[in-house]
Length: 236
Image (tube, rainbow, N blue to C red; front, side, top):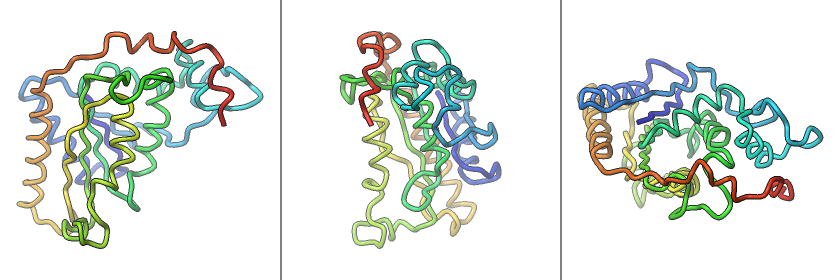
């Protein structure tokens, strides 16, 4: 299992949630790796530095360069490290705060750079035929706003549509079966007892996920072979 934490403060409640879930899972006999993106100095911006060898030195086209790096193993070391962790994990948990109606740039950058073309998706392999079909994912999210503000009649609206870009257009797009998110609402206003309830809720959800069967797609690592070299460079 891989838990990706996108929060710059080691003493944050996001880190407490990730570490608490990892401890419970390990006690239950599960292997857990935590990717603390901020501590690792992970870069959020996708660009030429992502690859050690260019497919086209005159123009940087993200999908073309990602496909080339997937074929030849020439991603930058931080991307390769994270891809190895993803490849080994049957379950992925994304732990992040909600900032300005979305995840921090650090998490979005992790998706942009790590879940690359050729590694996490290719043409013709989306959703029900996605490369990570059979694997499972969960979002654990903290908010400053209360449940009332994220209600149907609240000023922010329900949390589901806010998380849709990550859930549907990233995780489900890649084939993950995504569990209902675990949301710790109004964290700055909570006392120790309420925070413990949030810690327990994530640990219970993670354990339930870990106890479900997982069947990996057998051909995901070879999916790029069906896509002709250079087919991506015609795009914008």
